[in-house]
Length: 258
Ligand SMILES: C[S@@+](CC[C@H](N)C(=O)[O-])C[C@H]1O[C@@H](n2cnc3c(N)ncnc32)[C@H](O)[C@@H]1O
Image (cartoon, rainbow, N blue to C red; front, side):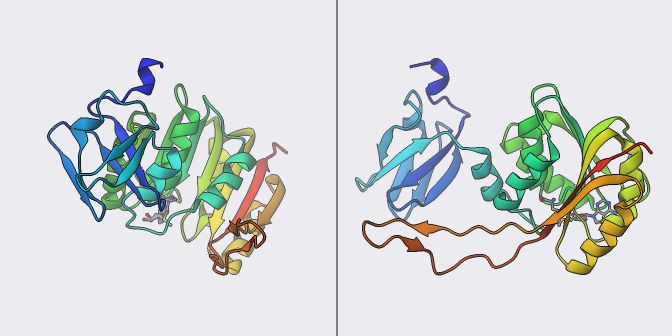
C-alpha cells in the first residue's frame, strides 16, 4: 500500500454507513463524532487504509473513504443557490477547462463552482472569483480551505459589471442575476476562442444573455440537463419516482475576433 493510501492526522475523510449516509470529517486525535449509529473516535482512523471498515462503540459498521470533490461540494456550507453536479459536469466539459487554465467566475456565492474549477486547474492554473458580497466570499474561502484548494483562488469583492481585471483568460463563468451586463467585460478578459459559460435560472434571462452574445461569440448553445436515478433491482429495475424537476439553463459560447 502507498503511504498516500494511509490515513493521517489532519486528513479529511468521508465515513459512510451501509445505508449510504455520509459524514465528512477532519481526522483529529482528540475528537470523536456522535452519530445515530454510535460514537467513533477519530484518532482510531490514523494508520488505516482508505476503504477500511471501522466500528462505532455500538458495534455498527462504517467505512472510511477518501472524499471526492463532489463530497466537498455537497457538504459545503451553502448560503446561496448553488450549481448542482449534473450541471457542473456539463459546464466543465463544454468550457474545456483543464489543468493549467486561468479562469474568472462571478459570483462566488458558496464557492461550489469555484471549488470544482480550482480542483480541475491545479497545480499550475488559477481562478479569479468575483462577488459583490464579502460575507459570501468569506464562506466560500472557508469551504475552499476545507477542501485544500484555497491557494488556487484569488477572491475579489467587485462587480464584474464594473470590469474583470484579468486578460488572456481561458474561460469565464457567469452565475448571477444579470449576466448579460458583464458579457462585454468577459469578452475583453477572454483570449481568442476562450469559452464563456452562463448559468441562468429563467428563460427571459437566457434570452437577454444570448442576445448580448450575438455579435462577438459563436457556437452559442443553451441547454437544460436532466438527471434521473435508476433503482436497479433484479427483475424490477425502473426510474426512481422522484427527481429534481428543474435547476437552471446553461449557455455556452466561444469568443471570436471579428
Ligand atoms: C447564485 S450565487 C452563485 C453561486 C455559485 N456559482 C456557487 O456555485 O456557489 C450568485 C452570486 O452572485 C453574486 N453577484 C450578484 N451580482 C454580482 C455582480 N455584478 N458581480 C459579481 N457577483 C455578483 C451574489 O452576491 C451571489 O453571491
